[in-house]
Image 1: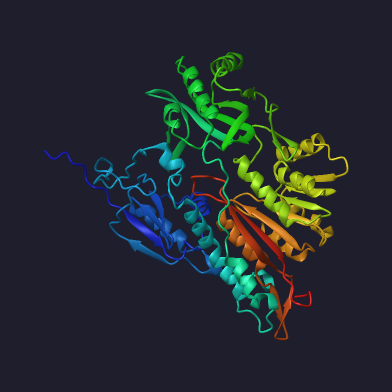
Image 2: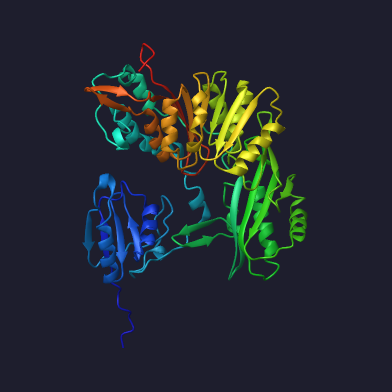
Length: 535
């Protein structure tokens, strides 16, 4: 008798003109909204493949896709693939080759393998002698395409907000012909690094979960809808977090392993301290338990943790039970409160280097515009370092704005006034109406970048210099194009500039995330002017 299961057959619809213009997460949401049922979705740089395990599902999806419009109102270009071979789902650490026991199964079903080590996931570049070179290359590649478009003079929009492109008008402003402009646009300085290469990360969110081996608490990674949790023992090889954080994970794991109750949730740990002798010295630690459907005696838990850790480190422990507890970070003579819900930079040493660099770009500003200000840290530091008398900060997170106002009062800015506005920046563009050439604009948006309305408002403002701080080169590139591209309409065959663009003065990279693939980028932009001072 043959016990072999029949091999499942799949068909797929390949969308050829989707990859460049379609955001996959949004596309998935549209599929779900329209009840398009599929087995899985696979993507490449060129196309998207929808895989189906039943003909009727494919027919419904094909009918729906043929009605959809994509870039510039063009329909999707589709092709049907019979007997489609689904990709195998595996975890492959960077720069490693799977061993024989990790090789893919011959089954057509997805296979998931456990990563070898946590170190290979969290810090794939730490022992790579070309770490800084690889990071610099990744940023240059992300910026290159957008900046090439800028230097060719393509527009960001024309009538009726329809995006079009054309070559630079015959009347070429002198700054676009200037070799120095081109050099500034493409030249990246060597990456600036700090002395602390491990144990620098000030924040960690660790999953707590009970499985067949007991309670595990540590970092986790996802493969589609499944995830793997590392134990506190496995976390000891992680070089991102200070030893105090790693020891705390072991203590908390031991505590929950003493009882058999079901447990699931997160442990949030934040630290503050100083850099001494190439090491981040933790002075305070904020601890928060965020558990699901579990009753924990907080007093008993806190006593246990304190008793276990008190003889190991001179670290003050603060337990957050109602979101009102905080720890304090000292920077440039100022004190900043760090709550469990608030954002703070994860590498204190490199963040200070970035602040010093931004200070060098400013020259006694009358007002500092702190856009996407968070808890107001950069704006307040710049105000203290430059003796600025006015700060205007905007952020969408109410808790961050409340913290910024609170910290401004605590830091005794006796001769400086500050206005902090809660809401999306694109809803408060009127703040740029009074912006003058003597003001200094700092942009530090989230990974998604700035809203197009904000870019347009900055171009039409009187701001002469911007500093853009970014941890995502892709969104940075898109925003730089929005700030630097020619924006004009043709009147009687002559270009009429609607707004004066900026040009890139300098780009610097900072190794904020040592051993990881990410990098912090600081770009200085100044208003474009020709020899006569006008565009």
